[in-house]
Image (cartoon, rainbow, N blue to C red; front, side):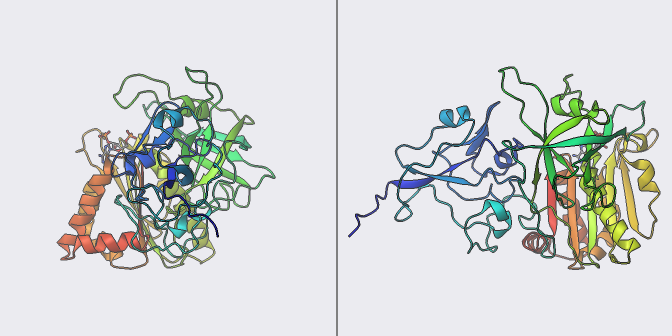
Amino acid sequence: MTAPIPSSIIKQHLIDPEICIRCNTCEETCPIDAITHDSNNYVVNPEVCQSCMACVPPCPTGAIDNWLKVLSDQTYSMDEQFGWMELPAQQDLPEPAAEPAGAQQPVAAPAVAAEAQEDPNADLDGLPSTSAGASVPPWSAAHPYLNLYTHKNPVTATVVGNYRVTDDDTESDIHHIVLDFGEQPFPVLEGQSVAIFPPGTDASGRPYHARQYSIASPRDGERPRYNNLSLTVKRVTTDYDGKPTQGVCSNYLCDLKKNDTVKVIGPFGNTFLMPNQADSNLIMICTGTGSAPMRAMTERCRRLTKEQNFKGRLMLFFGARTERELPYFGPLMNLAKEFIDINLALSRAPGQPKRYVQDLIRERATDVMGLLEDGKTCIYVCGLKGMEDGVIDALQHVVSQAGGDWAEVHAQLKTQGRLHFETY
Ligand code: A2P
Protein backbone atom coordinates (compact mmCIF):
# COMPACT_ATOMS: atom_id res chain seq x y z
CA MET A 1 0.00 0.00 0.00
CA THR A 2 1.33 3.43 -0.82
CA ALA A 3 1.53 6.09 1.88
CA PRO A 4 -1.06 8.89 1.68
CA ILE A 5 0.16 11.89 -0.29
CA PRO A 6 0.82 14.78 2.06
CA SER A 7 -1.88 17.41 1.65
CA SER A 8 0.71 20.17 2.16
CA ILE A 9 1.89 19.87 -1.43
CA ILE A 10 0.46 22.59 -3.65
CA LYS A 11 1.00 23.83 -7.18
CA GLN A 12 2.54 27.29 -7.01
CA HIS A 13 1.71 29.70 -9.83
CA LEU A 14 4.90 31.04 -11.42
CA ILE A 15 5.93 32.99 -14.52
CA ASP A 16 8.65 31.59 -16.76
CA PRO A 17 11.27 34.39 -17.05
CA GLU A 18 12.72 32.84 -20.19
CA ILE A 19 9.47 33.05 -22.13
CA CYS A 20 7.93 36.19 -20.59
CA ILE A 21 8.19 39.22 -22.88
CA ARG A 22 7.36 41.69 -20.08
CA CYS A 23 4.28 43.02 -21.85
CA ASN A 24 2.51 43.72 -18.53
CA THR A 25 -0.70 41.99 -19.64
CA CYS A 26 -0.80 39.67 -16.60
CA GLU A 27 -0.25 42.47 -14.13
CA GLU A 28 -3.03 44.48 -15.74
CA THR A 29 -5.38 41.52 -15.85
CA CYS A 30 -4.96 40.17 -12.31
CA PRO A 31 -8.10 41.21 -10.44
CA ILE A 32 -6.41 41.07 -7.01
CA ASP A 33 -2.96 42.56 -7.74
CA ALA A 34 -1.11 39.30 -7.15
CA ILE A 35 1.32 40.01 -10.00
CA THR A 36 4.02 42.63 -9.97
CA HIS A 37 7.41 43.25 -11.57
CA ASP A 38 10.81 44.83 -11.18
CA SER A 39 13.32 45.65 -13.90
CA ASN A 40 14.14 41.95 -14.23
CA ASN A 41 11.02 39.80 -13.84
CA TYR A 42 7.27 39.55 -13.54
CA VAL A 43 6.39 37.55 -10.42
CA VAL A 44 3.36 36.11 -8.65
CA ASN A 45 2.85 36.78 -4.95
CA PRO A 46 2.11 33.36 -3.41
CA GLU A 47 0.37 35.04 -0.46
CA VAL A 48 -2.17 36.73 -2.72
CA CYS A 49 -2.70 34.57 -5.82
CA GLN A 50 -5.97 32.62 -5.74
CA SER A 51 -5.33 30.72 -8.99
CA CYS A 52 -8.40 32.28 -10.55
CA MET A 53 -6.73 31.88 -13.99
CA ALA A 54 -7.87 35.32 -15.17
CA CYS A 55 -4.29 36.10 -16.25
CA VAL A 56 -3.74 32.90 -18.23
CA PRO A 57 -5.74 33.36 -21.45
CA PRO A 58 -4.57 36.94 -22.18
CA CYS A 59 -0.84 36.10 -21.85
CA PRO A 60 0.48 36.18 -25.41
CA THR A 61 3.36 33.77 -24.78
CA GLY A 62 2.05 31.25 -22.25
CA ALA A 63 4.88 32.24 -19.85
CA ILE A 64 2.19 32.82 -17.21
CA ASP A 65 1.02 29.22 -17.23
CA ASN A 66 3.56 27.50 -14.97
CA TRP A 67 2.71 25.51 -11.88
CA LEU A 68 5.44 23.92 -9.78
CA LYS A 69 4.71 21.48 -6.99
CA VAL A 70 6.06 22.85 -3.72
CA LEU A 71 5.47 22.30 -0.03
CA SER A 72 2.92 24.85 1.11
CA ASP A 73 5.27 26.30 3.73
CA GLN A 74 8.15 26.50 1.23
CA THR A 75 6.70 28.49 -1.65
CA TYR A 76 9.10 30.54 -3.76
CA SER A 77 9.09 34.08 -2.40
CA MET A 78 8.74 37.18 -4.57
CA ASP A 79 12.39 38.06 -3.89
CA GLU A 80 13.50 34.66 -5.14
CA GLN A 81 11.36 35.04 -8.26
CA PHE A 82 12.74 38.55 -8.94
CA GLY A 83 16.25 37.08 -9.13
CA TRP A 84 15.49 34.19 -11.49
CA MET A 85 16.91 33.92 -14.97
CA GLU A 86 14.97 30.68 -15.47
CA LEU A 87 12.40 28.62 -13.57
CA PRO A 88 13.81 26.26 -10.96
CA ALA A 89 13.57 22.52 -11.70
CA GLN A 90 10.51 20.69 -10.44
CA GLN A 91 11.28 19.12 -7.06
CA ASP A 92 10.64 15.42 -6.70
CA LEU A 93 7.23 15.61 -5.02
CA PRO A 94 4.07 13.57 -5.52
CA GLU A 95 0.93 15.09 -7.01
CA PRO A 96 -1.17 17.03 -4.47
CA ALA A 97 -3.83 14.66 -3.04
CA ALA A 98 -6.75 17.04 -2.95
CA GLU A 99 -7.11 20.74 -3.29
CA PRO A 100 -6.40 22.14 0.15
CA ALA A 101 -8.38 25.22 1.08
CA GLY A 102 -6.73 28.35 -0.26
CA ALA A 103 -3.97 26.42 -1.97
CA GLN A 104 -2.67 27.47 -5.36
CA GLN A 105 -4.06 25.02 -7.84
CA PRO A 106 -5.08 25.55 -11.43
CA VAL A 107 -8.81 25.38 -12.01
CA ALA A 108 -10.36 25.31 -15.49
CA ALA A 109 -7.95 26.16 -18.28
CA PRO A 110 -9.01 27.51 -21.67
CA ALA A 111 -8.37 25.13 -24.54
CA VAL A 112 -7.29 28.01 -26.75
CA ALA A 113 -4.08 28.63 -24.92
CA ALA A 114 -3.10 25.58 -26.97
CA GLU A 115 0.56 24.85 -26.60
CA ALA A 116 0.69 26.43 -23.18
CA GLN A 117 -2.10 24.36 -21.66
CA GLU A 118 -2.00 20.88 -20.24
CA ASP A 119 -5.60 20.08 -19.46
CA PRO A 120 -7.10 18.26 -22.44
CA ASN A 121 -10.55 18.43 -20.86
CA ALA A 122 -10.45 22.17 -20.51
CA ASP A 123 -13.80 23.82 -20.93
CA LEU A 124 -14.37 27.10 -22.71
CA ASP A 125 -17.47 27.90 -20.72
CA GLY A 126 -17.36 29.88 -17.52
CA LEU A 127 -13.89 31.26 -18.11
CA PRO A 128 -12.93 33.87 -15.64
CA SER A 129 -12.71 37.02 -17.66
CA THR A 130 -12.02 40.36 -16.11
CA SER A 131 -11.16 42.10 -19.32
CA ALA A 132 -13.55 43.81 -21.68
CA GLY A 133 -12.59 41.51 -24.52
CA ALA A 134 -12.87 37.83 -25.33
CA SER A 135 -10.37 35.25 -24.14
CA VAL A 136 -11.15 32.95 -27.04
CA PRO A 137 -10.71 33.50 -30.79
CA PRO A 138 -13.63 33.44 -33.24
CA TRP A 139 -14.61 29.81 -33.83
CA SER A 140 -13.50 29.84 -37.46
CA ALA A 141 -10.04 31.32 -36.83
CA ALA A 142 -7.09 29.36 -38.15
CA HIS A 143 -4.98 27.64 -35.51
CA PRO A 144 -1.93 29.76 -34.65
CA TYR A 145 1.60 28.57 -34.07
CA LEU A 146 2.97 29.86 -30.77
CA ASN A 147 6.46 30.22 -29.25
CA LEU A 148 8.33 28.56 -32.09
CA TYR A 149 11.32 30.68 -31.10
CA THR A 150 12.05 31.57 -27.47
CA HIS A 151 14.66 33.47 -25.48
CA LYS A 152 16.88 30.39 -25.65
CA ASN A 153 16.56 29.92 -29.41
CA PRO A 154 15.69 33.22 -31.12
CA VAL A 155 15.59 33.28 -34.89
CA THR A 156 17.66 35.76 -36.88
CA ALA A 157 15.74 37.77 -39.47
CA THR A 158 17.15 40.13 -42.10
CA VAL A 159 15.85 43.65 -42.61
CA VAL A 160 14.68 43.98 -46.20
CA GLY A 161 12.92 47.31 -45.84
CA ASN A 162 12.58 50.19 -43.40
CA TYR A 163 10.42 53.14 -44.43
CA ARG A 164 8.91 56.05 -42.61
CA VAL A 165 5.13 56.00 -43.02
CA THR A 166 4.28 59.40 -41.54
CA ASP A 167 5.19 62.75 -43.05
CA ASP A 168 8.84 63.69 -42.49
CA ASP A 169 8.25 66.97 -40.71
CA THR A 170 5.80 65.56 -38.13
CA GLU A 171 6.51 64.56 -34.55
CA SER A 172 5.22 61.00 -35.10
CA ASP A 173 8.15 59.07 -36.53
CA ILE A 174 6.50 55.77 -37.47
CA HIS A 175 8.31 53.13 -39.51
CA HIS A 176 7.21 50.19 -41.59
CA ILE A 177 9.90 47.55 -41.14
CA VAL A 178 10.04 44.38 -43.21
CA LEU A 179 11.85 41.33 -41.83
CA ASP A 180 12.71 38.30 -43.91
CA PHE A 181 13.19 34.85 -42.41
CA GLY A 182 14.78 33.17 -45.43
CA GLU A 183 14.55 29.39 -45.13
CA GLN A 184 13.60 29.45 -41.44
CA PRO A 185 9.94 28.65 -40.78
CA PHE A 186 8.04 31.54 -39.18
CA PRO A 187 4.32 30.93 -39.81
CA VAL A 188 2.05 33.71 -38.53
CA LEU A 189 -1.57 34.79 -38.59
CA GLU A 190 -2.98 38.31 -38.74
CA GLY A 191 -3.35 39.65 -35.19
CA GLN A 192 -0.31 37.80 -33.84
CA SER A 193 2.83 39.51 -32.58
CA VAL A 194 6.56 38.91 -32.32
CA ALA A 195 9.17 40.22 -29.94
CA ILE A 196 12.54 41.67 -30.81
CA PHE A 197 15.71 41.67 -28.74
CA PRO A 198 17.50 45.01 -28.86
CA PRO A 199 21.24 44.50 -28.57
CA GLY A 200 23.09 45.65 -25.44
CA THR A 201 22.52 45.60 -21.73
CA ASP A 202 20.56 47.66 -19.22
CA ALA A 203 22.00 49.73 -16.36
CA SER A 204 22.52 46.61 -14.25
CA GLY A 205 24.41 44.84 -17.02
CA ARG A 206 21.63 42.41 -17.97
CA PRO A 207 20.74 41.91 -21.63
CA TYR A 208 17.73 44.00 -22.63
CA HIS A 209 14.40 42.23 -22.57
CA ALA A 210 12.58 41.54 -25.81
CA ARG A 211 9.89 44.08 -26.86
CA GLN A 212 6.62 42.99 -28.41
CA TYR A 213 5.22 44.29 -31.73
CA SER A 214 2.07 43.41 -33.64
CA ILE A 215 2.56 42.01 -37.11
CA ALA A 216 1.35 44.37 -39.84
CA SER A 217 1.32 41.92 -42.75
CA PRO A 218 -0.97 39.03 -43.65
CA ARG A 219 -0.19 35.36 -43.19
CA ASP A 220 1.23 34.86 -46.68
CA GLY A 221 3.84 37.55 -46.19
CA GLU A 222 4.33 41.26 -46.63
CA ARG A 223 5.16 40.28 -50.15
CA PRO A 224 2.83 37.42 -51.11
CA ARG A 225 4.48 34.01 -50.91
CA TYR A 226 7.67 35.42 -49.41
CA ASN A 227 8.78 34.34 -45.94
CA ASN A 228 8.64 37.85 -44.55
CA LEU A 229 6.52 40.00 -42.28
CA SER A 230 6.24 43.66 -41.41
CA LEU A 231 6.02 45.67 -38.19
CA THR A 232 4.76 49.18 -37.50
CA VAL A 233 7.09 50.86 -35.01
CA LYS A 234 6.86 54.34 -33.52
CA ARG A 235 10.11 55.90 -32.37
CA VAL A 236 9.66 56.56 -28.67
CA THR A 237 11.20 59.86 -27.59
CA THR A 238 9.26 60.57 -24.39
CA ASP A 239 8.08 58.52 -21.45
CA TYR A 240 4.46 58.25 -20.26
CA ASP A 241 4.83 61.56 -18.41
CA GLY A 242 6.14 63.32 -21.52
CA LYS A 243 9.74 63.53 -20.25
CA PRO A 244 12.37 63.08 -22.98
CA THR A 245 13.69 59.53 -23.18
CA GLN A 246 14.97 57.27 -25.95
CA GLY A 247 12.97 54.06 -26.28
CA VAL A 248 15.59 51.33 -26.49
CA CYS A 249 13.98 48.95 -28.94
CA SER A 250 11.93 51.41 -31.00
CA ASN A 251 15.00 53.55 -31.73
CA TYR A 252 17.04 50.45 -32.53
CA LEU A 253 14.35 49.27 -34.97
CA CYS A 254 13.68 52.62 -36.59
CA ASP A 255 17.42 53.05 -37.24
CA LEU A 256 17.91 49.62 -38.84
CA LYS A 257 19.34 49.54 -42.36
CA LYS A 258 18.64 47.09 -45.14
CA ASN A 259 20.54 43.80 -44.63
CA ASP A 260 20.95 44.37 -40.88
CA THR A 261 19.90 41.35 -38.83
CA VAL A 262 17.63 41.20 -35.78
CA LYS A 263 16.87 38.55 -33.18
CA VAL A 264 13.19 37.63 -33.12
CA ILE A 265 11.08 35.38 -30.87
CA GLY A 266 7.48 34.26 -31.21
CA PRO A 267 4.99 34.13 -32.74
CA PHE A 268 2.64 35.10 -29.90
CA GLY A 269 -1.10 35.54 -29.54
CA ASN A 270 -3.91 33.02 -29.79
CA THR A 271 -7.11 35.05 -29.48
CA PHE A 272 -6.81 38.32 -31.45
CA LEU A 273 -7.34 36.36 -34.65
CA MET A 274 -9.62 36.94 -37.61
CA PRO A 275 -12.51 34.69 -38.61
CA ASN A 276 -11.99 32.52 -41.66
CA GLN A 277 -15.50 32.62 -43.12
CA ALA A 278 -15.74 34.39 -46.45
CA ASP A 279 -18.79 36.38 -45.34
CA SER A 280 -17.55 37.54 -41.92
CA ASN A 281 -17.39 41.27 -41.20
CA LEU A 282 -14.67 43.12 -39.34
CA ILE A 283 -15.05 46.30 -37.31
CA MET A 284 -11.50 47.55 -36.72
CA ILE A 285 -10.83 50.33 -34.22
CA CYS A 286 -7.29 51.64 -33.76
CA THR A 287 -5.02 54.53 -32.94
CA GLY A 288 -1.48 55.13 -34.26
CA THR A 289 0.63 51.97 -34.44
CA GLY A 290 -2.41 50.00 -33.27
CA SER A 291 -3.13 50.01 -37.00
CA ALA A 292 -0.61 47.17 -37.50
CA PRO A 293 -3.01 44.23 -37.02
CA MET A 294 -5.72 46.13 -38.89
CA ARG A 295 -3.39 46.50 -41.86
CA ALA A 296 -2.66 42.77 -41.69
CA MET A 297 -6.35 41.85 -41.61
CA THR A 298 -7.35 44.37 -44.27
CA GLU A 299 -4.63 43.16 -46.61
CA ARG A 300 -5.64 39.54 -46.01
CA CYS A 301 -9.22 40.43 -47.00
CA ARG A 302 -8.03 42.46 -49.98
CA ARG A 303 -6.02 39.54 -51.32
CA LEU A 304 -8.96 37.17 -50.72
CA THR A 305 -11.33 39.59 -52.45
CA LYS A 306 -9.14 39.50 -55.56
CA GLU A 307 -9.63 35.72 -55.60
CA GLN A 308 -13.35 36.22 -54.85
CA ASN A 309 -12.91 34.44 -51.51
CA PHE A 310 -14.01 37.31 -49.29
CA LYS A 311 -17.47 38.81 -49.38
CA GLY A 312 -17.74 40.39 -45.92
CA ARG A 313 -17.77 44.04 -44.95
CA LEU A 314 -14.93 45.99 -43.36
CA MET A 315 -15.40 49.08 -41.23
CA LEU A 316 -12.35 50.93 -39.91
CA PHE A 317 -12.15 53.61 -37.21
CA PHE A 318 -8.63 55.04 -37.19
CA GLY A 319 -7.44 57.70 -34.74
CA ALA A 320 -4.40 59.90 -35.31
CA ARG A 321 -3.32 63.45 -34.54
CA THR A 322 -3.46 64.59 -38.16
CA GLU A 323 -3.66 62.97 -41.58
CA ARG A 324 0.05 63.53 -41.97
CA GLU A 325 0.76 61.61 -38.74
CA LEU A 326 -1.53 58.74 -39.64
CA PRO A 327 0.60 55.75 -40.65
CA TYR A 328 -0.16 54.35 -44.13
CA PHE A 329 -2.44 57.29 -44.93
CA GLY A 330 -1.72 57.19 -48.68
CA PRO A 331 -2.23 53.44 -49.24
CA LEU A 332 -5.29 53.47 -46.99
CA MET A 333 -6.94 56.17 -49.03
CA ASN A 334 -6.34 54.17 -52.20
CA LEU A 335 -8.57 51.34 -51.02
CA ALA A 336 -11.95 51.17 -52.72
CA LYS A 337 -14.92 52.55 -50.74
CA GLU A 338 -16.94 49.43 -51.58
CA PHE A 339 -14.19 47.33 -50.00
CA ILE A 340 -13.68 49.22 -46.72
CA ASP A 341 -15.63 51.88 -44.89
CA ILE A 342 -12.91 54.19 -43.50
CA ASN A 343 -13.56 56.64 -40.65
CA LEU A 344 -10.64 58.85 -39.62
CA ALA A 345 -10.72 60.48 -36.20
CA LEU A 346 -8.22 63.33 -36.16
CA SER A 347 -7.48 64.92 -32.82
CA ARG A 348 -5.17 67.77 -33.81
CA ALA A 349 -6.16 68.68 -37.36
CA PRO A 350 -5.79 72.47 -37.73
CA GLY A 351 -9.13 74.25 -37.73
CA GLN A 352 -11.11 71.10 -36.91
CA PRO A 353 -12.64 69.93 -33.64
CA LYS A 354 -10.79 67.20 -31.75
CA ARG A 355 -12.18 63.78 -32.68
CA TYR A 356 -11.51 60.39 -31.13
CA VAL A 357 -12.48 57.02 -32.60
CA GLN A 358 -15.24 56.66 -30.04
CA ASP A 359 -16.87 59.88 -31.30
CA LEU A 360 -17.05 58.45 -34.80
CA ILE A 361 -18.44 55.12 -33.58
CA ARG A 362 -21.29 57.09 -32.01
CA GLU A 363 -21.83 59.07 -35.19
CA ARG A 364 -22.00 55.88 -37.24
CA ALA A 365 -24.22 54.12 -34.68
CA THR A 366 -26.78 52.85 -37.19
CA ASP A 367 -24.18 51.23 -39.45
CA VAL A 368 -22.19 49.83 -36.53
CA MET A 369 -25.38 48.33 -35.11
CA GLY A 370 -26.25 46.87 -38.50
CA LEU A 371 -22.95 45.00 -38.47
CA LEU A 372 -23.20 44.05 -34.79
CA GLU A 373 -26.54 42.37 -35.41
CA ASP A 374 -24.80 39.97 -37.78
CA GLY A 375 -23.34 37.06 -35.79
CA LYS A 376 -20.46 36.94 -38.26
CA THR A 377 -19.11 40.36 -37.23
CA CYS A 378 -15.95 40.53 -35.12
CA ILE A 379 -14.58 43.67 -33.47
CA TYR A 380 -10.87 44.40 -33.00
CA VAL A 381 -9.49 47.26 -30.93
CA CYS A 382 -5.77 48.07 -30.86
CA GLY A 383 -3.86 51.10 -29.70
CA LEU A 384 -3.73 53.38 -26.71
CA LYS A 385 -4.93 51.90 -23.43
CA GLY A 386 -6.99 55.01 -22.81
CA MET A 387 -9.36 54.31 -25.69
CA GLU A 388 -10.52 50.98 -24.24
CA ASP A 389 -13.13 52.50 -21.93
CA GLY A 390 -14.13 55.05 -24.52
CA VAL A 391 -14.76 52.36 -27.13
CA ILE A 392 -16.77 50.22 -24.73
CA ASP A 393 -18.89 53.26 -23.82
CA ALA A 394 -19.42 54.04 -27.49
CA LEU A 395 -20.46 50.45 -28.29
CA GLN A 396 -22.80 50.50 -25.31
CA HIS A 397 -24.33 53.69 -26.68
CA VAL A 398 -24.75 52.12 -30.13
CA VAL A 399 -26.54 49.06 -28.75
CA SER A 400 -28.69 50.92 -26.19
CA GLN A 401 -29.78 53.48 -28.77
CA ALA A 402 -31.05 50.63 -30.93
CA GLY A 403 -33.04 49.31 -27.96
CA GLY A 404 -30.64 46.46 -27.22
CA ASP A 405 -29.22 45.24 -23.93
CA TRP A 406 -25.50 45.99 -23.94
CA ALA A 407 -24.70 43.62 -21.06
CA GLU A 408 -26.23 40.77 -23.04
CA VAL A 409 -24.57 41.73 -26.33
CA HIS A 410 -21.23 42.28 -24.62
CA ALA A 411 -21.35 38.88 -22.90
CA GLN A 412 -22.20 37.22 -26.20
CA LEU A 413 -19.40 38.99 -28.07
CA LYS A 414 -16.97 37.76 -25.43
CA THR A 415 -18.08 34.14 -25.26
CA GLN A 416 -18.19 33.95 -29.05
CA GLY A 417 -14.68 35.38 -29.41
CA ARG A 418 -15.97 38.36 -31.37
CA LEU A 419 -14.57 41.30 -29.38
CA HIS A 420 -10.82 41.68 -28.99
CA PHE A 421 -8.60 44.29 -27.36
CA GLU A 422 -4.88 44.81 -27.60
CA THR A 423 -3.99 48.05 -25.89
CA TYR A 424 -0.80 49.43 -24.36
P1 A2P B 1 -4.46 63.25 -28.76
O1 A2P B 1 -4.22 64.28 -29.79
O2 A2P B 1 -5.42 63.70 -27.72
O3 A2P B 1 -3.18 62.73 -28.16
P2 A2P B 1 -0.57 59.05 -30.62
O4 A2P B 1 -0.27 59.89 -31.79
O5 A2P B 1 -0.14 59.62 -29.32
O6 A2P B 1 -0.15 57.63 -30.81
O7 A2P B 1 -2.18 58.98 -30.52
C1 A2P B 1 -2.96 58.54 -31.58
C2 A2P B 1 -4.31 59.16 -31.49
O8 A2P B 1 -5.05 58.62 -30.38
C3 A2P B 1 -4.25 60.64 -31.28
O9 A2P B 1 -5.22 61.23 -32.12
C4 A2P B 1 -4.61 60.80 -29.84
O10 A2P B 1 -5.21 62.06 -29.51
C5 A2P B 1 -5.66 59.72 -29.70
N1 A2P B 1 -6.00 59.42 -28.31
C6 A2P B 1 -5.37 59.76 -27.18
N2 A2P B 1 -6.03 59.33 -26.09
C7 A2P B 1 -7.13 58.70 -26.55
C8 A2P B 1 -8.24 58.04 -25.91
N3 A2P B 1 -8.34 57.96 -24.60
N4 A2P B 1 -9.20 57.52 -26.70
C9 A2P B 1 -9.11 57.59 -28.05
N5 A2P B 1 -8.10 58.20 -28.70
C10 A2P B 1 -7.13 58.75 -27.96
